[in-house]
Image (tube, rainbow, N blue to C red; front, side, top):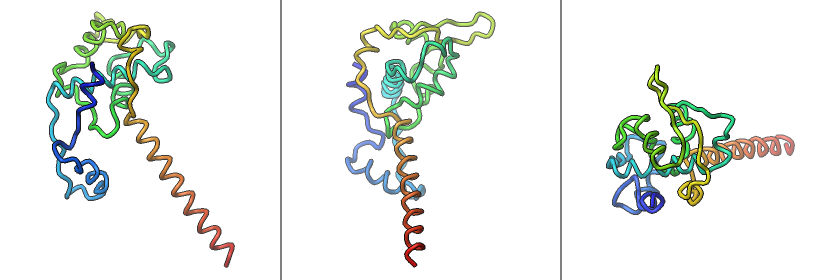
Length: 173
């Protein structure tokens, strides 16, 4: 259900070619049209998809790193697991408003076990229910972290390619 809700989302809104134009004009920030604001329901769908992505990918969170504070879980795992090409997740623009409310929802859905510290009132993820049908059945999507890694690799290869080119030209002269 979450996968279908996220599949229809676009950040640019309306115009089919808008996403391509925005990608080409990355250096000219003054000429870009600002992305439309997502509704709280759309932000909820993005956040839930990112949570499922983070929980379903075995390499992302291992059991040795648990318990993990909710803020660390959000910053290290959920936000980088958002679909590629989307804006950073803003929990304040969702219906959850706070990370603790999101983690209570995740716990209620049965995706993970969470516990609130009585003294600090901070919620921590204490376990992942990898056998839950939603977690097992989540269809992986390209993440923002994957896109950033591919971009970094492409830049590195381009830099190395230019360096090799100049080495070859210097050696030929």
